[in-house]
Length: 305
Image (cartoon, rainbow, N blue to C red):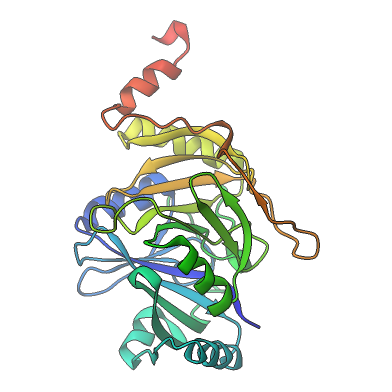
């Protein structure tokens, strides 16, 4: 009866026009709504939105929305947080309207992360998700948005908060003191690591969106090459969640991972493990100055060069 999924993420951005073009032309998200101030709501399943882009300029994570099933589940989690000494405040009528939810509370997680719990999201069952470019679609629904990897000041403190405070389950540990957590069969909805000082590094390292087919990964990869979007990590497969994916740079500078084929967790049989490497193969990190055209040329058959 606790958290069921990663519901939505709010990001503060400087260049809404670049983001809209990136999200629709490259990623395939559907523009669901636009507020008078320019805020964009982006959709990838029957939810009204999963990503919210606010024109506030941070180019970083603003808030994370965790979904629960019922008002009772929300009340129980709020009581659990308050018993642990975490101040929790109700969302205002305006905030509930902005998030498109029936119930909302807010609190601050370690390292200053703005977390929210909600129930009753607005969905569009009569208006199926329509990708903004040809593709199969996204694997979301009851599994949620995808996952986040965030930069924290103290991994152990955040791990205790996520497991003891929010009731997330530890999935495994990765190289570089990464820790992965799940709330449903998706291998992880959030991963944490001490990736660098918060004063000089973004809170948000990357967002992962899982697509329905390997071809969707490949077409997104090709679009990045063709449209001049910087690929930061080449095609590869992770050793823990077995996701086949690549990473590209968003207009805000953090990474977007587009992947397929992630393993799902069965809590009845799952065993927590530690990994000393991140990849089965691939995911080569590319220098910041590597132009997409160079990869396109390298990938072309000899007769086309």
